[in-house]
Every structure is written in structure tokens, then in C-alpha cells.
Length: 240
Image (cartoon, rainbow, N blue to C red):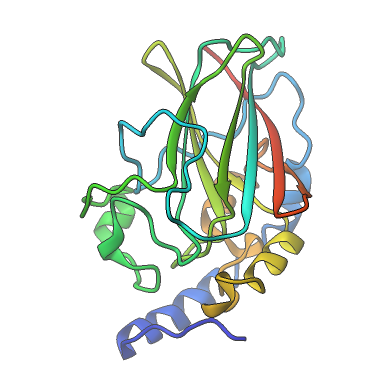
């Protein structure tokens, strides 16, 4: 199945131009180098992105009514250099659903090219009060939290990713994005309900945010299949 085409001629032209431009990016070597991060280096900081909403509910299971391939996401927060766990850190996650839609921003749609001004400012105006696929937890003495969610879908102009924000006593320590191996992306996009949209035209190798983050060191979880989905685990390194 091919990716679902945008509804308007203008959006179809924009997608064609965008995929052509992004196709000039080649992140493969950067991603390879970013796979291993020395203990003294902090995880790539990419900010909160345009779809952040403060006040996510405190919960482990963030799915609500969203269908998708189940994903258990284990995060451990440690101090860069010493690898000491950061107990008491607030860990927030948010991402789009299988159709590429974010809660709080459902009117924007997944196939429309974002407004250039909003994209540049990395901030969109919320359109609704939904909170699906958003949540926060407080890390225990081991610095760890675990969320139950789904693998996200794709939207214009991004590859699959999950946002993570880490703070301590109100101070932001990290805003990053987690990415999935190409083979996981291919398997998920061929599975329901993702397959009704088809595979995304935007990939890790050509993603602009991965490029800007130099391959996004420290943002690539170990992703393993389970009986009903996937388990992803990663240690995020921060400085207080």
C-alpha cells in the first residue's frame, strides 16, 4: 500500500516538494554514530517541539481509546558522567496516534503541511482539551519509569517519534525525541490500524530533526518484540 495522498492539489505539490528536499538529507552515518553514547555525554536535547501541552495527567497507561501496536516504554534517568539515578525526576511523554494526530491539536490533521510560521516558531495553538497519549510519572530511587502506550504513526513532515521531557523540582533538564529502527517502523506500518494510511513518506534517514540533532545521540531505544507488541528501553543522560 502506498501512503495516502493529501486531499488538495496544493498539499500534494507541497508533499512532493518536501519529500524531494528531505530526500537530499542522508542521516544514516549520523544515526550509526549516535547509537552509542559515552557516559559523560548528555542525551541530545531537541526541545519540546510544537505539540507540547503542560499539565499532562500522572499515569502509566496513556492510551485512553487510541488503537495501535502496544508499546511498553521503559525510561531511566541518570546523571551524565556518574550514571547516578535522578530520583524524583518528572518524566513526561507525548506523541501522535496511529493516524498521526496529537491530542490538543486534532484540527491540524496529519497530512497537511504545517504553517511555516508555526513550524519555525516550533509552537502551534492548541485546538482542543484532549489528553490521549500524554502522561507523566515521577522517577523512583532507581531513576526509572515505565509507560504503557502505542507505537506512534507518521505525520507531515516527520518520521515516527516519541517526545520526552525530564524536569526536576521545576527545572527542565531535557527535551528529546525517541526514534524507532527502520525494521520496526516497516512492520508497524504494515499492521492495522496503521496500514490504512500506508507507509509514511518521511523516514529516519531523511528526517530534518534527526539531522539538526546530529543523529540524535542517546535517543535510540533498544526495541524488542513482545507477544502483543514491543518493549522499548533507554537510559537518558542529563545534567542537573
